[in-house]
Length: 130
Image (tube, rainbow, N blue to C red):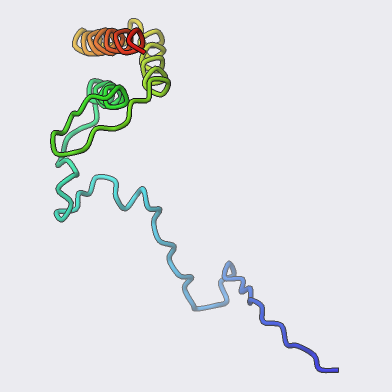
């Protein structure tokens, strides 16, 4: 009977000081590689634009508008209307408004309030038409 030689792996303990070999450096996580770096070959990435509360609210609001059929970029095709998903984003912004009472600047409050108003009005008009 022939025995099959199993190939496995070798474990080497490099914690001890007896070996002169240096352990291989582990690569940084992917999120660390891209944090703060912008590829010059990718025109879709913004250059040195800080993430602020207002930009976060605008980003979420834009996503909700796109889900309600708004075409934010004339060169891109419109997304199919998805009212339940748009409503989820509106609800998230509503929770954010509720949980940040007293912790926002006047500008941040205005951005959040105005975005929620616009999203709610658009949602009501679309849901009443269906």
